[in-house]
Image (tube, rainbow, N blue to C red; front, side):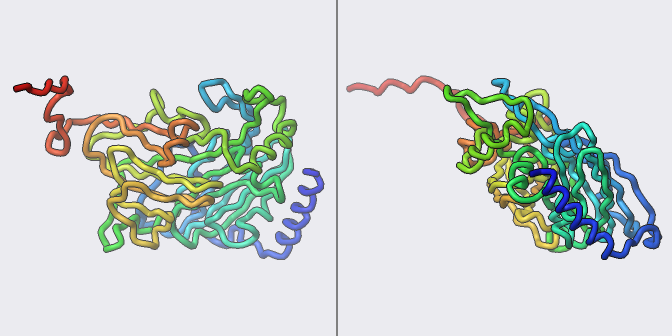
Length: 364
């Protein structure tokens, strides 16, 4: 079934490629090769630029691999871009051309492609990028609108949701050439940027209620689809694993630093909340052409989209960043931590009296 579908998509892609004129080097634009990094980190980039448009070169290598997704040792057959869940965040500026080499090594078992929500035409590039194991393809698209956008695998039919919830999703951030603003003309700059990709997972259980393990992703397909159809995830995690962004992997910042948080959810709605902090500036829909909302306690990320929030940390300590469906945050794994260093400000918060026993009532 997969081979037949792959052939159909490859044929459609071939027709479109023949019908589409190639721009190639007649663009006469400078090229910049970008070395991607695994989330939550973001590759080096300019926030604002005075340079003209460039051809930004990225490589996404598909990796199918078995991973552990919680502290109970539950295994999961992940499908990934560059080996991480989510795939790397790619940052460009409006007007740049994004040139992506998609590599499907022959060691993989399935065909894959990529649909960029930030691109225009051909199912976001999905029709032009479907590659079988042992193949690679190069796609170029123009970044015509600013914001944060999801990308994901979309190989056709029932394979689409399975590949997406198996880890094949990531995000693109297209910055305005002048950088971010508050919507009133004042420039906004961040000291650090982190990318948090929220992932819902659907792991089958055996007759005793224990999570099952499989030799391959293909072997797990039928059971996994049955769980998926119930629309109730067994895990909701940040960056591929419960606890992936806590403890020694907590995100770091200092008091006084502005931190930009890009949050994506390729499949379900989410409600990010920073406990003890706020969204100073929030592009809830992820589109920088819209003025940001300010001072939010919780914001909404629509399924199949990415949003961005900026916050200046004002107090030191451990901040929990959660999806504010607290059942999913506490029970299913959707919690990250920010570890913030700096000096405490008693004016913002202080313990007036320490805990003590309640005085016994006086009797006459």
